[in-house]
Length: 79
Image (cartoon, rainbow, N blue to C red; front, top):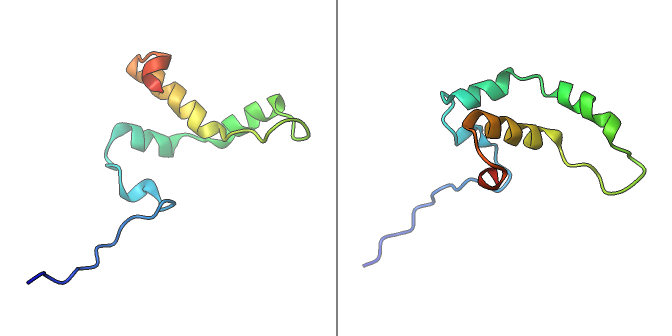
């Protein structure tokens, strides 16, 4: 006889990622210490709200660049 299906909760697509990565990981801890609004303020002068597509969020771009530098990765490897 087949066993009854047990409901196993699954993380949704937009569920917070804080439950997934190891919070003791140094890069995870570094992300909480960075004032990300400084990057938004610094880069906003390079974007025009009236022209072109909306800008991508700057945090993932800066994060990938920092990860690239810290791990000495090439552009091809970071993608």
